[in-house]
Length: 175
Image 1 (cartoon, rainbow, N blue to C red):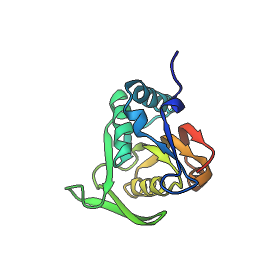
Image 2: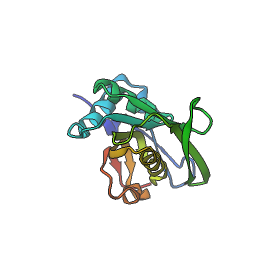
Image 3: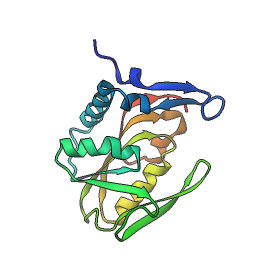
Image 4: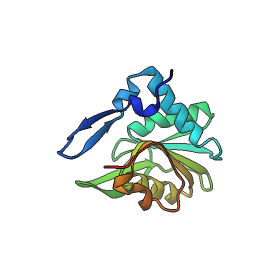
C-alpha cells in the first residue's frame, strides 16, 4: 500500500518558536518514494497548463522545478539570491517575516511573451512567490501558474497571490 505524500512530511512542533508546527521537506527528499511522489503529484496538478519555461527560487525551487522541467522537456530558469548569477541580471527587493531579501535572475532567461510555471517547495505568506512573479513580469514573461508541494493556508499566501493560479500538493490549515 502506497503512502500518501503527507505521510512523508515530518512535523516538528515548536520550531523555530513555540506554537509553530514546522513542516520539514527534507524527510520527503530523503525518501526515494516520497521524492518521486512529490514530483509526480506536483507535475500532475499542472498537466493541463501550457507553459514554455519552468522557474524556481533557490534552493528548494530548484529541487522540485528541475525534474518537472526535465520531464516535460522545458527549460529551467534559476531565481537566486543576490550576487550569485554571473551575467547581467534584474533584481527585486522584498520583505521577509524578519527583514528583507533580494532575488535576481538573468536578464536573458525569460523572453517577452513566454508562459512561465513557477515551482517551489512551500508557500507561506507568499512574499517570495510574489517577488518571483514581479521579476518574471519585468522581463515580459507571463506567469500562468504556481505549483508548490506545501501550502501553509493560515499564513494567507494564496490571498496575496489572488489572480494567479496556485496549486499545492498538500495544504495545511495552520501556520
